[in-house]
Length: 230
Image (cartoon, rainbow, N blue to C red; front, side):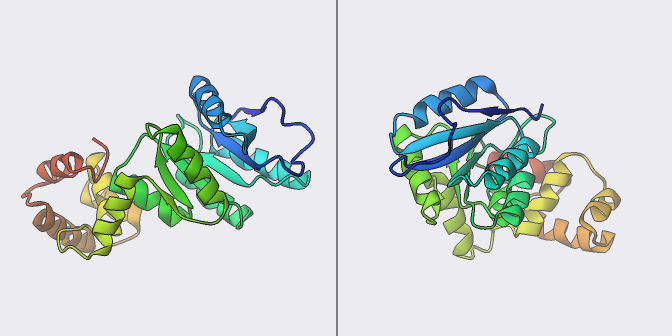
């Protein structure tokens, strides 16, 4: 795990007219190869390096910055085996290099994943099954400082912004994720640094919003609605 590789043709850094440079982060070599080939269809996008997990991404970006070749964008997967995940890597990248945009490119479209990525500082969130031209456009938008969201992702975020009374808060979504792992109220309280009483209060609100009357039902409904991963 944690491998870094220089992409073909990445030597020498960006040159005038080369277009925007990107670092591709995904733990599956075959997926990276496919994404690199798809991105190469746009002559204005160059994949200058690749990484197999979040830690490797931090290392390769740091090296490129030291060499005076800061990339224009990082394309980041979310789940990468046992290595550092995309949310943690995005958060650290934003601290390490605040002006470097991170575009999430993943298969997951749950509210929990979207909210975690946005809160970590991601500039955009796209799904891997999007059309190549949509991903190309998202890369250019994110690199230019514009928000780039898949339509399904934008719809979820807009639903939350409307203040629907049945929408779960970020904390409630976070608690639901822990609930789905089978943790007890005491364990959840320790994980979130809150009291057991607060956990119970959140659970009451979650049950009301989801129309559930117990933990198992709440997790099932949340999975069905795409709030957390099934």
